[in-house]
Amino acid sequence: MHELAVTESILEIATTHASQAQATRVTDIYLVIGKLSSIIDDSIQFYWDMISQGTLCEGATLHFERIPARLSCQDCGSEYTLDRELEPCPQCSSSRVRVLTGEEFHLDSIEIIKD
Amino acid sequence: MSSVRVPVIERILNANDQIAQQNRSQLDSAGVFSINIMASPGAGKTSLILATIQRLNQRLRLGVVEGDTAPVTIDADKVLAAGMPAVQINTGGDCHLDAVMLGSALPALPLQELDAIIVENVGNLVCPAAFNLGTHANVLVASIPEGDDKPYKYPAIYRGIDVLILNKMDLLPYVRFNLDYFRQGVEMLNPGVITFPVSCETGEGLEPWVAWIEQQVRNKHIQ
Image (cartoon, rainbow over all chains, first blue to last red):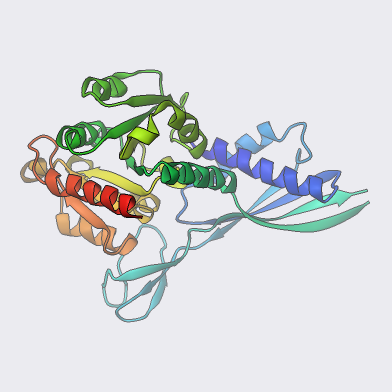
């Protein structure tokens, strides 16, 4: 349920950068979100449509780049992607693993229109 | 009229992180060690806090911040009854505390007179993980009846903690809970995390936990 707070942050960051760039409108917002972060794209879209009304960002399309959760095994060195739940190394069953990617949570860029 | 791509590259919760940093500075300058306690509802956050206060109230000056989704003061009342300064944050239905909420609660506590504060987050394994409060230690209370699969289902919260408390150990003989499977999940997400198996009901295992807090407070005073 923290998608509302997250969506408000997205709006604030996008609006600040759009104003600095003297945009008349924001058309696209590119988000990078790792699979391990528990954010539901649909909920963000839902809140977005509500809270972006009347702002520079009204009508902007949200693009979600979902980064897969990649782990590396500290014992056999193999790297693997989590398809669903967390699991030990599929090669050697070791649980000595390190998370490489999947925790990303940032706003990468915006597409704006200038007069 | 032209279309331009503007690079931003900013953490989505950057604003929260900045306020969290301010909270941390405020606590540091008052010399107060701070703990953020997270857990699912019913894991024993309030029981742990009360048991901790009971053991430490002769040894440390503690304050408590209680986060609740509704304006009920049950938890804060229990803490006040135990003789500790407590302040309640009503999140108005929000599922987590954030740095702004903690920042606005801190002035209600006599920080200069305290050694440590304990913040009780809202019972939830998802949202609190995303919002840094600025506290020195993030502590998760897991409990035996919740099941051994929680690290696998809620990886984010296990990633960001400094201490894991496994509560209700007294129920282990009665509940299907595979300790090895649980520990394997924790180890994958947070290798070597400090873990205290406890029972707030019997008091088992609580002494090492409160000794850990005392040690952190001593380290803070040396700094």
